[in-house]
Image (cartoon, rainbow, N blue to C red; front, side, top):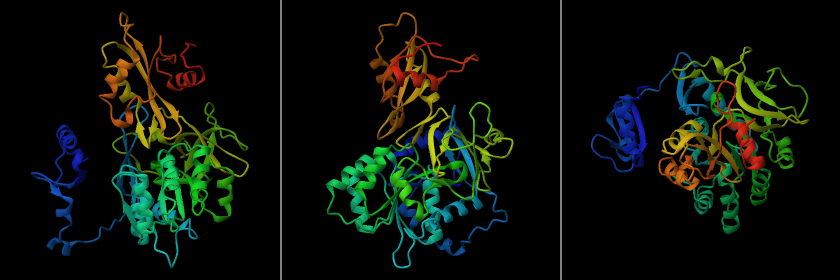
Length: 432
């Protein structure tokens, strides 16, 4: 991939230069948010009037199914994959998302203003940006989240809709109690999602924002955004009665839930299996990768999520087949964490798993087998070593547990899910 223009924060310049050199990428323009140096252009400079603006022509595509953007997501066993999304998919998803809530955020008398903290790494940010342009909406951009500032922004800009990830819910709920005098009457819709939301989190947020509709949404980058939600006004009571549901699957999807072993569709309510989707909104494929395994023989996208629907056709995401996990919305790849841990001289083997956390989604834990003769090495030593080398979202917040051996399949693959279940149930690993 050879981008012509790259936008980057000042804080990331050093890493950026290293990666660009390794990848042998030389963009024509690099725009820096903040002070620029040398060959780079600052964002303020970029915004200055330019005579060439008069020559600008709107891009027209002859093929709406041509790739428009590549949004990077996580692979389950390696580096993030580039997901190729086309013009048609992005426009359909971004436009319909607004139209689905006509009585809540669309009004002839009130301007719609969106507050979102997602970076452009996330499809939610891409989709809301395109949707804002299509609908003529304002979008408030923030560098980082702060609960007090959240309420100030809602009041100042009369925000009508905001997305609050689960790892910010506690701060927002507490912040509301501390900012009772702030006028948030404009806030009609509060959306959460991206990772598991607990009953307590949903109930607390509904109580803290009685004047807003609080809704839990499920989506995937491979289909450019939302898959399910309770957007129909007549279904709003269901979200309150069933706080952990991610709603009803949107009408432009065909779907099925298949048994994890037989891959045959399950029938009836509350039967768990992998959710699969068929739609004209799916990705073109993974960038420079074989995407055939992403779909089954009938053309359904394999979501990798264990799900079920209840008697009201409300969808629940119970677990993930994929081995990756999320910390505050960031994808954590076990293989990368394991590589760092195994660089410690005393470590023979390592497996990284995610331990559920009420606010952050999941915290990384390393299960470690020590080399012979290193039995005196402490978990704290390994944790300190790894945390100094891991990214902020990858740190071993759930600690290091030293075990006798890792559980593996007959072909030698590490059974991370089985070990995670053992740790959660009895705190130890037993070979089977």
